[in-house]
Image (tube, rainbow, N blue to C red; front, side, top):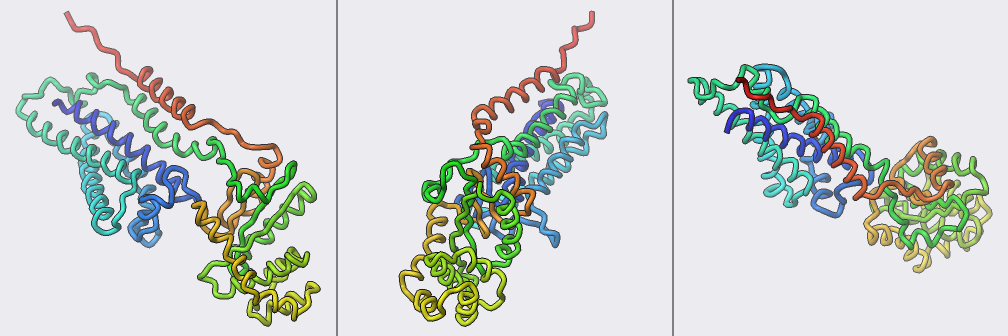
Length: 384
């Protein structure tokens, strides 16, 4: 093997690592993962203490994205300066070996994308070692035919081709969430929808600080669209909020008596979610205190208060609160009004069809093929 071949393997492995790191970064920075589900080993690794680094809590995939980009960039520098790629690739391979050991011995779960990136890093590290060793062996002239640029004129691709492939590896996963087809709304959620409306279903916990932060934003956008919106609020009291279940029961009782929205506003406005506070909130919207308290204490009301959590868990959609379905789109977290308006407009326009995964993959492969074809280095004719 010549050094040029070791460099080829190093770059190809780095491209795979860049592709995987980009996909993982999207999953780590998004409330809902796109490439690797939360119920898989990816979710377990993501939730572990090893998924982020340092006091700034930097996601490891984002760090990998930076490091692999650096390796590829160094490998494209002219002359002997490209030698710096090998030590960095070797260090990356050693780090990847440690991450694989952590998944096996400490976390007890393997993330498919993480294993792909780590394996590619190991291959790049091995190629880096080969590059260094071949350089030492060639110092006595055995590889003297290679130029000072390490055989750049013998490489398969020009630098521009590698740069294009690197850009594709990074951007293809980044673009996929914005062009992919939205999944069908689960029938349990769609059962609350009305034809011809902008349908909005919110899962809420009245003690959740993010739900309280989100409430005015959502209300503002709903008011803007007025009668075009069909809105349903479903209670999902989290166990970590000890007063949330009581508030959910009070809200359910108010819904049964036609005062659901008024009660929700009162619950979001009050800081007192004790039983006395709930009864007071109910009285402020016209509910009889004794009737409300009796309803809140009924076993069937308590069972209903826990039904939404069971539903989202069964569907594998419980990522956090608030969770809002707007048409075909699921929004997790306290989004601000501009993002909500975009979802409302999309729901008003109809289902977002997007690009099928197979078609998108074909486009990415075609772009990569074009980069290879137009970036290939033409073979020089032998000298006479």
